[in-house]
Image (cartoon, rainbow, N blue to C red; front, side, top):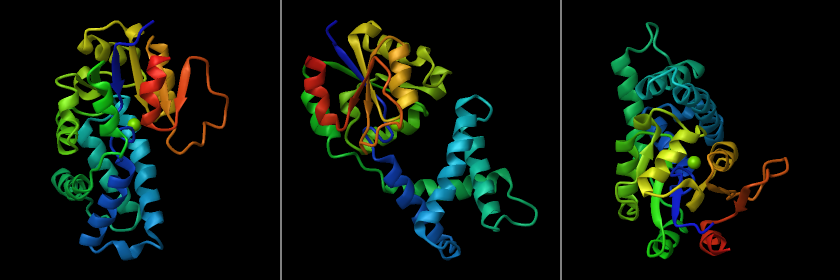
Length: 240
Ligand SMILES: [Mg+2]
């Protein structure tokens, strides 16, 4: 089947989320006078990321709202380093603390160097869109800041507004509908093996798992999940 559309994950696929998260956290901790509490930058980031992974999963599972997961991450992090005030943090205080982190993180947003050249190459021949586990306003602002929004028009399908998150087939199918194409004519590219690669395959799309680190999964790759190490491998792969 000929592929006529390509849907992209955003974070750690087009945008270097992990770097902006690290730079943003360290900048915020420095500004708050907390950076000296850690034995290394790596330790601070590891604690933040561990909590983020757990609470973001609860958000994606529908247990928490987007704002609640931010507040809980803030409280858990400060508690972990012994800096949660005696009476705890009010919702407003937690929101303000997290927003401070967000300002530093957003100032550090950057696209991977292969993102724009590949989008430019694909744009004349394919309908392009995004399917992401996040909110529309947040991802639209990010793509705009990165200079990538123009490639996608209004075809941004986000879990917050859609009501289900990857790997649910429904969000992949909504992305295909936004392109006006059936799933068998659409490719999907993302950095998370189970969520993006297996999820897109199960929804009937042509799935590409972007393994930027080239480390594999530790297990055999399942049939129907294609592996690429860089976005540059995508245009020739789509022609195959
Ligand atoms: Mg991602």
